[in-house]
Amino acid sequence: MQFLKEQKQNITQSRHVVARFANREQIELYMRTGLKLSRKIASQKWGAKVIDQLAADLQNKLPGLRGFSYRNLMKMKQFAEEFKSFEFLQLVTAETGIMGAAEFLPLVTAEFDSTILPQHFFDTSLTRLILLLNRYKNMEERFFYIVQTATQHWSVSILEHKINEGLFKHHRRLPDNFNETVSQELKETALQVFQDEYLWDFMLLDSDENERVIESEIVNNIRKFILGLGKGFSFIGNKYRVELDGQEFFVDLLFFNRNLQSLVIFELKRGKFKPEYAGQLNFYLNVLDDKVKLPNENPSIGIIICKEKSNTVVEYAFKSIDNAMGAATFRTAR
Image (tube, rainbow, N blue to C red; front, top):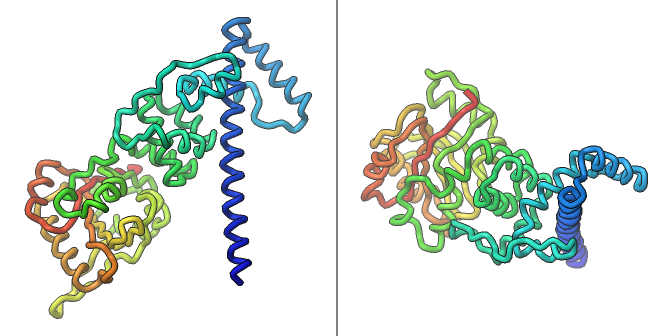
């Protein structure tokens, strides 16, 4: 029934809007409470005993109240002092009588847009914001993860994984040939989707284990692997068989990425990157585009993942190759 379908959509959208407003209100409450605490501590020399008593009094006045322990009150103070200087929070700070700096922090990287940052900030839960507050002092790094968390809909555990992975340092640093091989409309998406290094912390490997063992570990932990890759990936298969002129060839890992609307190969190499890997990957991409890719899909992309690489060697290996490819490294728990 059309009515049922429309009503389901309306309810879902309404729930999403309510959740966003609730999160924004919680953040603003944190900010107001934290700034008032900051002012009291500065002007009236409130110490730990006073704040501890305040937490107890709040609990007595509002039985069942959660999130206002001494520890959380101090987190609110820290949160408010760190973020009070930003224009999109100054309406909140004005209500407390404490105004922040007049200017917004210049955001160093072009992908940060100060017109949409407030939306991403208020779409990020307090738990995630506090996690970033504790892990990073640099505002650029904080805002990078805020934007990624909001747009990729990361859970707390995925955010922690991306922090441990060092995504900020590896984002958009993949050595690739995308400028020459990927269409202008897709280039930015491709740069966002892939990274220079991946952390596979679900994997324990000895130094002498080969690509087959790595592939087996990935397939056994495919959900974790996909979550680590990021948004839009669907797993098609491992040792994906393609046939050409009566010969069989096998692609290590084959995915489809919805954002790119293209097949994506991941070729696994246990050691250091070698130039001949580019030729092998180029061959696989040619066969996929000719025999597997659907007419409405974009050309396939290939990523070689190895233990070590020289970006200079990678650059020369990819020169004059018409298929889109990149080379990344991986780390494991051991």
